[in-house]
Amino acid sequence: MLIGAMTSMHKTAICIAGFGDNASMFEPLARTPLAEACRLELLHLPGFGAGIALRPTTLQALGDHVTAKAAEVGATIVIAHSVASIIASLAARDPASPIDTVISLEGNLTAADAYFSGTAANYPDPESFRSSFMAKLQRKSDPLLARYRTVVAEADALALWQLGCDAKRFSDEAVPGEVLMQARHAAYLYNPANCPPETLDWLERHPLPRTRLDGASHWPTLDQPDQTARAILDALSGT
Image 1 (cartoon, helix red, strand yellow):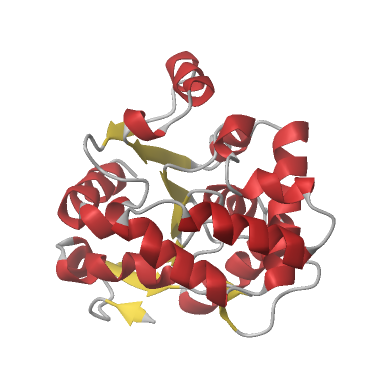
Image 2 (cartoon, rainbow, N blue to C red):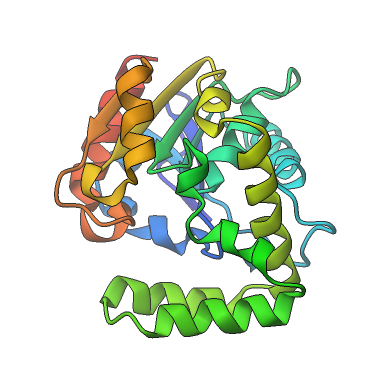
């Protein structure tokens, strides 16, 4: 789904959602100045709102998918939420990728950020993981989580489990924030209240450009779209 005028002066940004979510979380950005300045390609990932899931559904496989889509639509930017920040970072470091900019919305910087996805590795099969994960979400009454529960329920169970297991593996073997910083341009948008202490400590020790979204939820495009859009535009102005 494409948002924004098709003019030669516009850059194109692919928007990809985090664990179990789909790109509908970016729809509020259509009503912000960001959509006037940039063509937004809202990309449902395989298994998460789009088509048949990749097999296996790994971070690298999804990164390759994003690279191919970027080449197809002429995108140089990825706006990525949560664990999708790793997917975007892997796509950006592909020498053949046109992607040179990653805007991370509370993306994974440390292993502690895999607090949803990483739990998949504790379960022996997709159905037992999704059942437990849905039950955990059901115990929370936040309306944004209610939307998230609905979307997760529609995700491919095997893709959800495989992606979660791979996110845990990746975070144990590498530091996601360091991979993000390998992109030619990278920026991090976050509300410190949503971040684990390990991630806040990592941010203090690394020169990753960042903008605070005080008061925003973990899904800032939904509850703070204008603030998020301004922060993205500010980050893009330096690229």
